[in-house]
Amino acid sequence: MPAVLACARSSHVAESGFLEGHLTIVSLAQTEPAGAAPSKGLAENYADHPLLVLSGAGQAEIARVIADAHGNFRVALPPGAYVLDAQGRGPGRIRAKPKAFRVVSRETVRVDFDLDTGVR
Image (cartoon, rainbow, N blue to C red; front, side, top):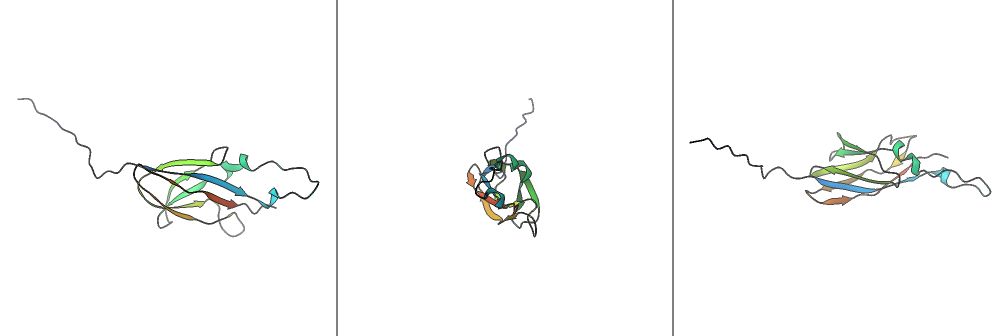
């Protein structure tokens, strides 16, 4: 009698969920004095401001996300608790408020993120 091999997928392995959102970059440079030549928009600088997905405790970097040319981002993540933060945040650097969120298997959570570059 031939041997039969079986392979079963564990029901304990959860499928990924998704984080999506929009990055808004705010800068004091966006407010031009009357009569000044308009400055270039900040949309082209999204790549200069990667977002970090950190573990729920905010200690370990899980993923680095770069918004597209329109400021939108999307990333697949395993279910769990996370914190969305900006790279380079701190005194004298960009200002942003980290946002906690939870990913659920096969669902999408939306977290929009604002950061201030502090550039004059």
